[in-house]
Image 1 (cartoon, helix red, strand yellow):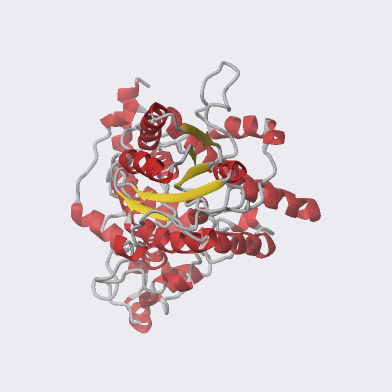
Image 2 (cartoon, one colour):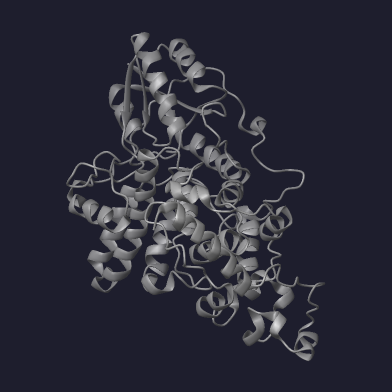
Amino acid sequence: MTTLVWFRNDLRLADNPALAWACARGEVVPMYVLDEVNVGHWPLGGAGKWWLHYSLKEFAQNLAGIILKRGDAREIIPALAQETGATAVCWNRRYDPAGIACDRDLKELLRGMDIEVASHKANLLFEPWDVQTGAGDDYKVFTPFWKACMDKAASIGTPLPAPKVQVPAKLPASDKLDDWGLLPTKPNWAAGWENLWQPGEQGAQIRLQAFLQEGLHGYAAGRDMPAHNHTSRLSPHLHFGEISPRQVWHATQNAMSHDKALAKDGNKFLAEVGWREFCHHVLYHAPALPEENWRKQFDAYPWEDDRAALKAWQRGQTGYPFVDAGMRELWHTGTMHNRVRMVVASFLIKHLRTHWREGENWFWDTLLDADLANNAAGWQWVAGSGADGAPYFRIFNPITQGYKFDPDGVYTRRWLPELAKLPTQYLFSPWEAPAEVLAKAGVKLGETYPRPIVGHAQARAAALAGYEIVKTAKGD
């Protein structure tokens, strides 16, 4: 029997339930659809396109062939099922609202053609509908959510081995990957990324093992220090499904079982995997999360619309070095350290009083790991408008955050070479440095490095005043 396997964000052979199910039935016709129709407001961003190109390139080689099509999956898949004589179509489930709607339509279409349809859990440890409160509601706070997940940890199955895939000798006509134009050319703003990342299933496994051996020890404390090597850098691999959370879970548990000293670090890392689960849980139950405030009282917040300030933030030209270092790391590498993400997000929302959706949109286009659930939940967490949101009065001071989490200035100097010679005591507030210190360091404020586009004290006061309006709307 021939089964059409529709790959999406699950570009791996191992621990791929849909692929394993299809292989057990017989011949497999692998396919990937670049569907820019059924994506809601969220077509793939520029950085994501870069990753997808290289991920698909490796995946096609691993499979010994895959059909690539660009267009509406609701039209392409039924037509391909007929052309190949497939008696079944299968895929791994997704949880975003546009994806769910598309899959529902396709199931109805295919079943109307007497074609079997099977969907599988592959990209989360727990289905969003399987983790509920005692009252049968969805969770809205992370800590009890993750505790409920841990109570079900025994249900996390063993990862599946890569199956033997029997692909027909002749597949239907396919698009050429290069013709999709996923890679930037004029200009090639991703130049050098191939030296920083290895998209694909092999790269994901190499990255996981390197992290477990070199980065997990000390993770609980070191994960907040951007100059240290304590981040897993697995998020793009997880987003594109080159590795499964189940594989990450079991590999981490295995590492902890062999070294009891890793328990604290390992459990903290797995809790971060749990945050990813929580974000998908929230998105599934609140599908408007990427576009609307989860806490409706935040609709009353008086946002500013300063396009020049937004542009300065995007370019890493705010005059606050710790913020600017993060934004430049993002531009040059397609990622940003998690602690710095919180600081730059807080700055945009609370110092510039720019709507969190502007930051969400920018991250969506520039992050390699741009994930609808994580991105929306993260921005709303910082704004205070989301599930388990940070307290509205928590306004990160970009100066003290720099001194606390980059005490030697290694990270900041790396991304702001124009400030490299500035003494650390002035690195995060160069405007406070005496003229002779600036001159010796070759820094000319307003020329080689910008002056602050907003004062911290005034910005904090304005943000809190805006949140007072929200409190009134809330009825507190």
